[in-house]
Image 1 (cartoon, rainbow, N blue to C red):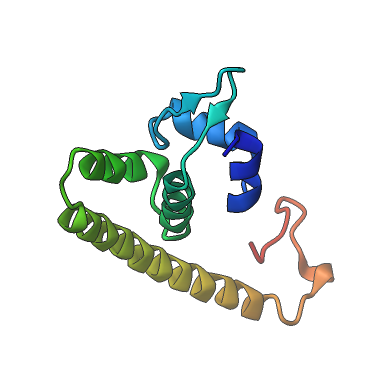
Image 2: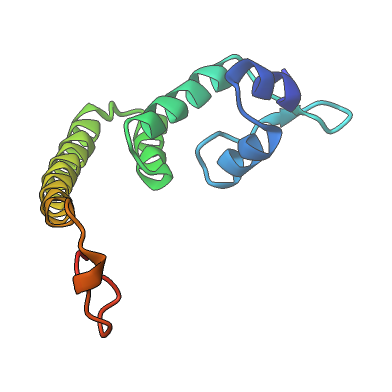
Amino acid sequence: MRIGELAAETGTTTKTLRFYEEQGLLSPTDRTPAGYRDYTPEAVARIDFIHRGRAAGLTLAQIRQIVEIRDAGRAPCEHVRDLLDARLNDIEQQIAQLGALRDTIAELRENASHPEPDTCSVDQVCRYV
């Protein structure tokens, strides 16, 4: 299938597909006699994997590592598990940071619940922040 057909079938753009190929995420494909890329049906599965990896928060570099392990004939399961463990840890840290931020903002908002503009100091922009 040509690049436009692959893009349409996978919900991506031809520019993105060329980028994936340049980055080693998508194997270079054969060319037709006219010079057009000629992708196999396996390219659809590869693009789907890339999309699922991105949806899980993996970077393109991490996805490339997984693809390279698979292309070398090995199962990347343990590597994927380790990446997902790290991603999960990152998310847990972000959630904790967001919780702390929410608490800080809630406290600031509470302090600003009854503003008294007449008592504001001219040397401060706003005492509530």
